[in-house]
Length: 399
Image 1 (cartoon, helix red, strand yellow):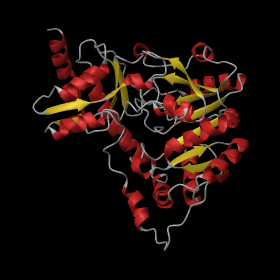
Image 2 (image 1 turned 30 degrees about the horizontal axis):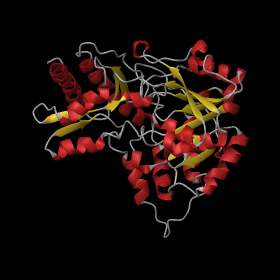
Image 3 (image 1 turned 90 degrees about the horizontal axis):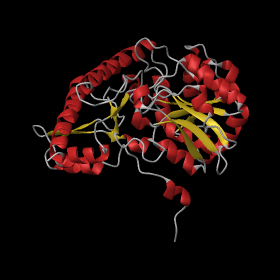
Image 4 (image 1 turned 90 degrees about the vertical axis):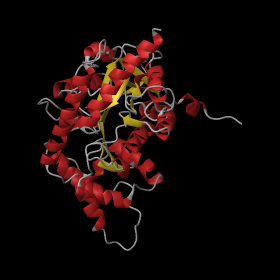
């Protein structure tokens, strides 16, 4: 018996695959600082649980396949705050942003079709595109340039007769790169000229730092017919386990046909939609407060990273990730050393090796992604442990 070529072509998540080794370290009595996964420690807003507690239905029934109207209306009002008008027909509620992406690729891609995306990118895009029979074509970016890619020559060099879409993650995972509205316009122009879709992953939308404006491809009405927005309550609302995402587009043909997939999987969680509706009605002051917290954590991480000789990193503009190049040949080997051989006062640290965030073989071997999702003191200590671990690692290898 054989498995499909598609599943064999997929890769394990670089974010989670070292978890069993970390667990062994913890079982041995070490404290492990988890900087590998984007699981915020910021409390989920109380309005989420308040809304669920107030849910008084006698039966938890199926929701509509497109989502509960209360949540759709809350999302509509949320976007009005940014001067963008949507209708219920433009919104499908999904089981996390992951399902929104899966549905999108199934709806757009025929076998062999290509999607362009800047690498390093959120590793599961490879899984989603491969499952739909498509292929990821990377725009290679560099740590030295802050992982920026919104340049016409870079993007157009990747376009072929099989290209179907340009994927943009802004603010970005794993790099924290933020697109300006002018850069979004450039990408819109390129997409229109080459008749491509724009898949806009905006799950970190408000987390743009240093006076950067909140931007969205939805703010460009001239490209509305080709823009597909993916959103989620997981990150900005610290509600990863709620598994509520959104697929948003004004392209009626796309939304009508994607509803076939939505109906096939029935619906997203009825109760979690009730809580999510309350999250989308939070005042903007909520985002300001949480953004300030993550920005402070970013500054702590960057300050500590700059103490490491040979590290290459530019301060990211958003999200809660930082990708950096380390002075080692293999970040995975270094991480194994941290988890199996190193500790400082009974403590060690883990991060996500960046090689799995690249589509180009061989790239990212000397890079890591840090998720600054812990409090400032823990983030400072975690990066300090990386520095101390590097000193011990290099001492061991130079014997």
